[in-house]
Image (cartoon, rainbow, N blue to C red; front, side, top):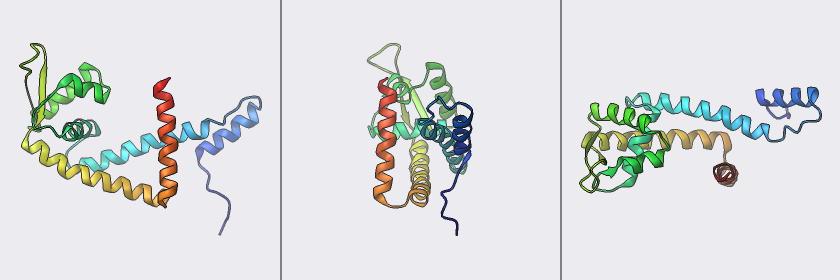
Length: 170
């Protein structure tokens, strides 16, 4: 068995940069490059997982956010839009699709003439209550297989948390 660590495309890129640009410091590239590539892979994996429920990642984000609010009443579209960091047009497109599928409903906000409230239908709640556990289970299994023990998982999560916080605060 070979004791050398496994390599990936990022390792090759770093090696090439060090050879061709010895004055540059590529020390951030292994983390950022892998996070970017990993994000694409994870989103593709999630799309496959959600396809069995007839959902896209975008649909899932909206339904899970609505479910997570756990309020018995509808919430304002602007609040959801801000929590998902979407443009007004992007939000409208998602809401139209989910409403036409019978997964959510919209109503006028009685406290704001221009406002719209949205809430899950019974079908929407049932669907997200089936999809969410399946997604979480698949992601937990992936992380457990790749990272292993709880201490390494917590360290990885904390490192990524710090990187995200630094980026979002800049």
